[in-house]
Structures are given as C-alpha cells and as structure tokens.
Length: 363
Image 1 (cartoon, rainbow, N blue to C red):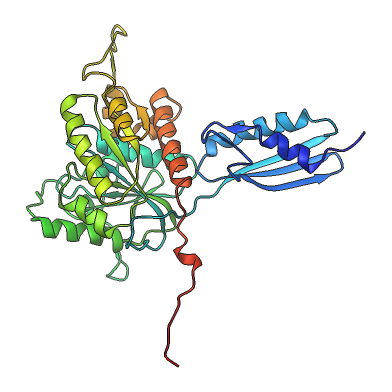
Image 2 (cartoon, helix red, strand yellow):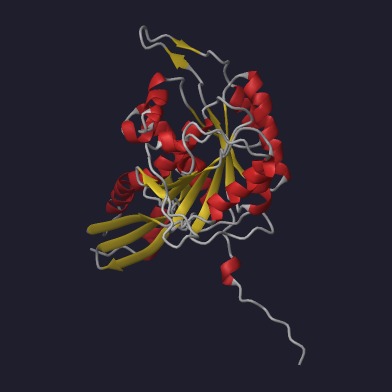
C-alpha cells in the first residue's frame, strides 16, 4: 500500500471550511504543523481566535476527512488557540499586558449594553481567553452587581490597583471604590481622568481581551477613549426601535471619525416570546439593526430576545453565560463573542514590537 503524500493531505485540508471564519484551514494559515510517517498523519491546527467549544468539532472534521484518504492508517489531530495583539487607531500605544480592547457602546441608555458587555466577556472567557472587564460608566456603574463582586480592590504598592475577580474575569469599576448609594457629582474632566486611571493604574494580568463597558451616548468618555485608549474594535448595541437606532447611528459616526473599526451590531430585545402561551411578538419593531448594519457595511453579530431570565440572571450576579451556559441565549452570546474574536483576528496585527528603535546620530 502506498503512503499518503503531504500534497494530498494539504489538498484535503484546503477543502475543509472552518464554520467560524468561512475559510479553509490552509488559506487561514491555521495548519501549524503537518507530519507524515509511513501511513500515520499528525496535524496541528491553531485557531487565531478563542474557540474551546470548537476544538472537538474541528478535530472530528479534520480526522474524518484525512482518514478517507487512500494510504492513511492512523490520524492524530490537535487543535488549539492563540490570540495576538492587533492594530489600533494611529498615534495610540498599546497598554502593557493587554492584547486587544473591545469597546461596547450604545447611542442611548436602556438597550441592554452592560448586560451584553458582561456576557460577551464571559463568553470569550468560556472559549478559553484571558479576559478583563473595565466598567467605564462612571455615573452608573453596574458591573460590580452583574459580576456579583463585593469589596474594594487592593493596592499593595499604593500606586497600582489589583483587579477584582468574578466568574474568571479580571474587573475594575468606580463602583468598587465608592459606596453604592453615593452619586458621582463630577464634571467631564474628572470623569475622563477617572477612566484613564482605572485603565492604566490597574495591574492587569496578561489579557487577551479587555472589554470596556462604555456609558451611553457620544460624550467626554467616548472622546477620551478614541484619543488615548488603544481600541481594537467597537460593538454597537441597540434595540430594533427607531428611537434607539437614531442614537446608535450617532455612535457609528463617532467611531468612524476617530478611526476605530466597528466589529458589528448586537440587537437586543429583538423579539418577545410569551412565557405563558409561547406567542412571539416584535414589540420594538423588526429588522432595524439589520438595516442599519447593511447601511454601514458591518455585520449583525446576533439578535437576542426580550427574556426576563436575562435580566434576572444579570441582577443576581450570575449573567446568562454563567447561569445557563448550555442554554439557547448563552449560545447566542458565545456566537457573538466568536464573531468578534474572528473579526479581530482577521484585522491587521500590531507589528510595533517587531521594529527596532532607530536612532539617528551625527558622527
């Protein structure tokens, strides 16, 4: 029996499509190692996005295809992920220990932005990434409640804050530093300074992604974010309602002007299914987010139902991805998270560390 050739194996791998990227494993450069010894084939697949839940299906997909090749005896396939830093807006340096920053924004309040942000962070962590959460909503911090974290952060050296931890996330929020019933009666400059300090004076530990939960609107914090924070991409959260979409479009324009890529749109409260009779109704309209995404040439990352469980779980300190990890809604959040990670992986990588410092001297 003749043994299989490397060209045959590569040809087969080039026909196998990764459902998350829409590309084959050869074109996406996911094949890291290929070894053939006699009739034994060993393949290492390395995904450029966190996809722990995808490892087993991809492994089965590759093994099945390679076993069908003539001359193949045994097949060993290993699948892993590696997340790298990607480019940000011009003139802004990356922050040490943070590879990628995702801003979650909305044009107006009440559309479920913070709930989306925390479930997005938890979904990325569930897929194997190291994830942090920065609650940038200085006036109305909600992440301490949603993550079920109490207490205050420590500062062993008196300079840097140690992030709090909840459900495997590193987290920081102004809510950890003030009493729950204390109003933040601050003007814009104080708020933006607080955001910078929370971001840069926190001892983040080797993050693949930092999710920033922005306050609603397009004000001082958003402008500071665009000018001083290295943002890899932004996610816009809206509902199908016309009023919400009008404000969401302003968010689009803002990110476009400052050169921050928009990863896509998440539509909350897309449809309501009655818990008593099962009747489905589009309370806030239908198709609005899809139309807006099409107008701006971005992707509708996913649509979430108006479900009382999502609210109850977030209020209890155990958001949906943690409370019901195998449920239908958690699956939507995980799908959104993978799409965000894939879109970041397909963007330009940060190569600033690859170039030496050039010093010009008069001799």
